[in-house]
Image 1 (tube, rainbow, N blue to C red):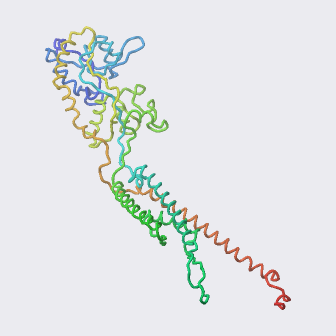
Image 2: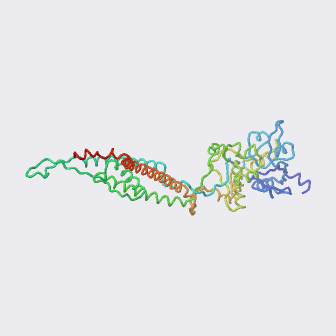
Length: 450
């Protein structure tokens, strides 16, 4: 390009700002070409006013920040020093707004955060998920009520059974009718066994276990039958839901909105925005942020379009979605504009063209076409695919089983100890008889009198 042609071209200070502007090839020191959505639009705008475009860069590859002496670094500094006529698109804040003259906005953007995409995990407490916590509480309350009712009704039934029932019948006296007392006794249903039987009927029926007992007649048997029917319904629903839920993957999102990100455990990897978030305290480099994001080293929060570009490139390379974006966004008034030097003659010419392209949907369509692949990674993460059960799914059930064995083993030891103590007490009188027979046997003189 000759010097005359260069004088007819617009000098544009450029920096990487995906997906608006991208350097190809990235992360190299050789001559690079500026790509992305905006260069094509700028070429069209320049041709529309009879000009060409020349892109100039800075060593920092940033749009710049304001120094204490009032000067700017990066692309904005090049415009202020008349090393460039304008910049490529950038996010506009109050400081950049006063550093030059901004154009019509290209697109409205908003900020979002992303993190490494969680994988399918085993659900240790999956055996309690068929019912909600409220249903579990109601089941517990029902079990306690049935247990108390069975115990009270059984005690009442036993009390009625042992009451004397007067009847007129022959008591063995010849020719006389006397008032006799008829007592019905049931040695197998003594008061001390009633509470134990009530526990057996309630718990074993709920767990679908056989009970080697028969409930007494009357209202107790009716209540036991109703509890048997209710337990059958609960067990059937529980088993059906458990089978359906255990084969579904469990995906736990570290955070899905800004509040969950901020209130994360300070000692965890996600805790504290000042340590985990990609912010002004860390390098202003999207490539750096994306590399650590995929590894799970930190959270990255950037304008949503830049984040979508990172996800799009990652999916293009790996063929899978290795990161996820939280559904909630913030800072929703982030405008993307060009920045001209003050008094630039190109501002008004570009504004009318940019406004027309935006209103006709050309700008929006350009961004959509550049980010077509990433739409596959924007679907809500759901547990809607089948998977084989792993050993981790049974850890919760195994822990309860081992806990039950531990309690049963302790009960067995207590029973052995109790049996040994009782047998020892029963043997002790016999040992005393051999040691002091005069204490337990009558004297010889007494037997002679008898």
